[in-house]
Amino acid sequence: MASKYIVLDTCIISEAQKPRPRPEVSAWLRRLPPSKVAIPFQVIFEVSHGIRLVEKANPGKARQLSEWFKELLAHNFFMPELTCEVADIMAAMATTGALRNYWLGAPEHEKSKRLKFGSDPIIAATAIAHGMPIATVDARDYMLIHRYFPLPGLYDPVVGEWVVDPASGWSFEVEDDPEVSAVDHNPNRMTGGVVRLRA
Image (cartoon, rainbow, N blue to C red; front, top):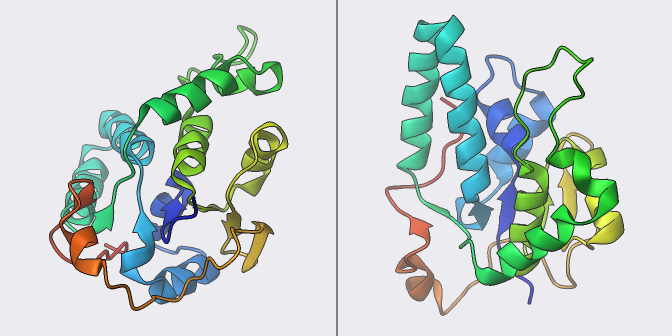
């Protein structure tokens, strides 16, 4: 079932808070109706984790990012539920050989000490289960997932194009929806105002 929301990937949220974000992404975010925004659990986790990593090297910068992120989380956006269907899709992805590198750490000969959480597959599984397209500036990783688990749409705001077409009838336009009041009372909707991604 297609959804009216679009899932914002972590790279979109991260791009929005940069001192000099890509102008294409900034322009797209300004045009994106707040009522279309979905931010999944894994994106919130990744941003929080990134801020905690910055804190070790630059506590002042981490405080700024933390304040910006608290303000973002106080705004009105939809948070898709982590359901049994999401878990089942994630399990299928985790047992797909071509996708295993999303979960495995770097080989011992590499210097990277970054943990791998399988974030792209978790975001993709959430989007698939809820019928929501994904907006990202990192389409290549999602296209690998799409090869095995068809995505309900993939949009790259840098080029302004759908890499994977959304469901028929999906649009960035806000529709007159008689169920808007029901959506506003949805327990998965984070409330507090409209989404403003720039600090």
